[in-house]
Amino acid sequence: MASGNQAAAKSESLYLKLQNALRESITSRRLSPNDAIPTERELAEEFNVSRITVRKAVDGLVYEGLLTRRQGAGTFVATRVEKSYSKMTSFTEDMISRGRIPSSKWLSKTSGTVNPEEALSLGLSPGTLVYRFNRMRFADGSSMGLDYATVPADCLPTLDSVEDSLYAALEAYGTRPIRALQRLRAVAFNAEQAKLLDIPTGAPGLLIERRGFLADGRPAEFTQSYYRGDAYDLMSELSHNP
Image 1 (cartoon, one colour):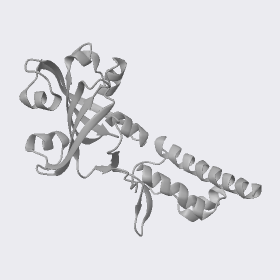
Image 2 (cartoon, one colour):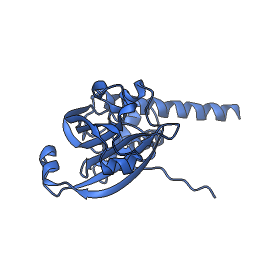
Image 3 (cartoon, helix red, strand yellow):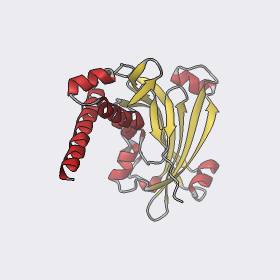
Image 4 (tube, rainbow, N blue to C red):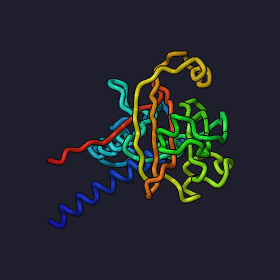
């Protein structure tokens, strides 16, 4: 029995070692998006492991969204981004976790009284002061989408508190949302949005509307994120508990 446990532990260690090596190659940019990784046979020989161990390690990275399989062609570093629909993460956190380099371009930072859509979404009274943050999003220099975020002014010290990451600023002030309601729907980019993203007018996209809340139930965020349909996938994990 002990020898069986030792063999299982050794197999697990080899699988994690290989998986970590591949992940590090991707996050350090030694393997770039769309690069093919070595074949199962080549990896098995290089790391002196079985092809079953190789397959298990690669399967895990495919599930994480770092790798993608192409039938008849092999396994490649993913170029599309898979966004988990079940976790509250920022765009910056998503990109970094997948070995991508995130960046943003500010379109505007403004303050004003809440408009009817914002008031309805956040449950705010007419006349409430809010901050609005509109940005373009990039990964590895390629446009990914547009973010339009509205935050009640009492969630941040000033409009200029947000430098790169809205969630980082909210967390620093102790007002990062701990739960959110999200709604997803398919959209077509209008002419203005398409021009910003350098894609054709009418190109398909994904709109994610998020309403974030603090622990005491107060609203902290209303964000509309428009992501390119050719560059962004949504992923969720489902389970059945009979």
